[in-house]
Amino acid sequence: MIAERIKKLREEKGLSQAELANIMGVSRMTINNYEMDKRSPDIAFVLKLADYFFVTVEYLIGKSEFKHQDDKEYTSEKVMKFMEISEHLPQQPIQSYLAEISKLLELAGEHNTGKEILFILQNSVSLANKIQNGYIDVKNTASDETIVLQDKGLSNEQIQSITAQKISALYECGYDGMLSFGDAVKMALQGFGKGC
Image (cartoon, rainbow, N blue to C red; front, side):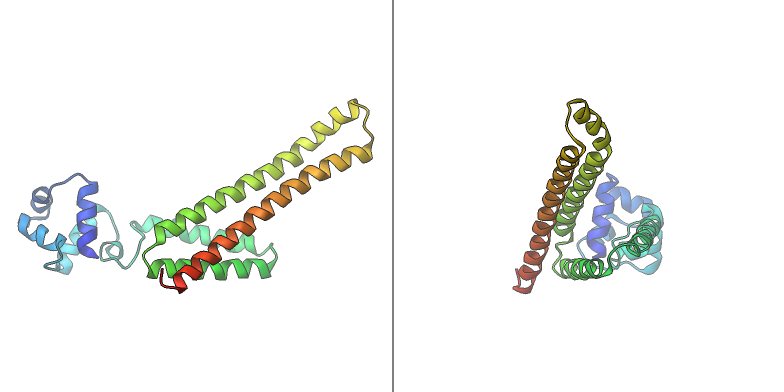
């Protein structure tokens, strides 16, 4: 893994092997051997390289995807925030969701499909945000629509019925979307189980 990371970091910085070798005080052939995984760098070189590229040693040797310590701290903060929020939500669905997501991410790590799975999860979260924002918009515009509908002479019962139908339709759309996402996660898990 360190071979891939050295090459990736060097290329991200736009350096040739010779340029990196000069910066690190080694020969170009040494860098080439590290990148081709023909030799392993010693700890002093790894520390120097991590400092130069401003990455964690764990990232460099492939033990973590946290490139920078700040990334790890940011992720930890978000996980803690999620835990705080989830305390106020129904626990059975949260626990079920977390179990499925954990299993999916673990399998994705084992099968090196993390980027693809995270792309799917990101899109599903985007869908959920759109649904939630739509619900909030309907709720926020309900009072404005109520005034318009009252001006048109509709009764309160009719107005409540129209508003309830909008919210119900939005909820059903969101529910169907989440079911589809759940089915996609289960299919992905089943695909991992079959060795795909």
